[in-house]
Length: 191
Ligand SMILES: Cc1cc2nc3c(=O)[nH]c(=O)nc-3n(C[C@H](O)[C@H](O)[C@H](O)COP(=O)(O)O)c2cc1C
Image 1 (cartoon, protein in one colour):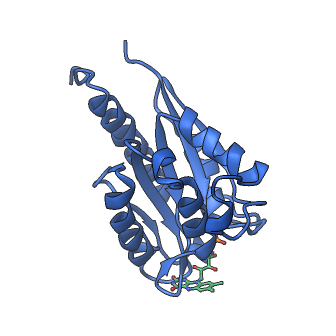
Image 2 (cartoon, protein in one colour; image 1 turned 180 degrees about the vertical axis):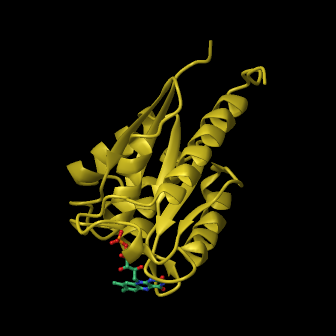
């Protein structure tokens, strides 16, 4: 029997009908056994100010607590101007400070993303991957989930309707749970 894996899914979009938040809802419906997913959005997280990093507002404290309690982090990464949406980068910066309380430290991490264009957030995901080096997170390399031309793949409420994307999501979740257990030092499950 494998141990449970608690994933925190963080959406980088504040939009009501966000396709990226929709990807996390779809992920919650496609979880492998012994895996759970809590979804958080970044509403209420203020712009980062280093003067306040030792006395952050409750929204930041609560966000950091959720990260601390999670075994693994799944980012849904919107692409803005070929990079990570500012709202997401801002929240990542808050939770990395002060340096003695970088709550990302040592966490397994994976990314998914949906965008209107043909790259499906691939450029933003690559930029975010660079930050995992200094955050000391452990990124899953493959498979990747980059949902391109999202207007054909989600409904008006941001719910995923595309079966191929759902299948990719399922494969990522299986690999991510295995990656998290591997980093914990559990022997791999028999094939
Ligand atoms: C400021 C801004 C910049 C954007 N830049 C890109 C981009 O570089 N590449 C892309 O594919 N889509 C871009 N888009 C479109 C987003 O892919 C689209 O708004 C998407 O729905 C955002 O994710 P969400 O549905 O989770 O809110 C941009 C949108 C905004 C508002």
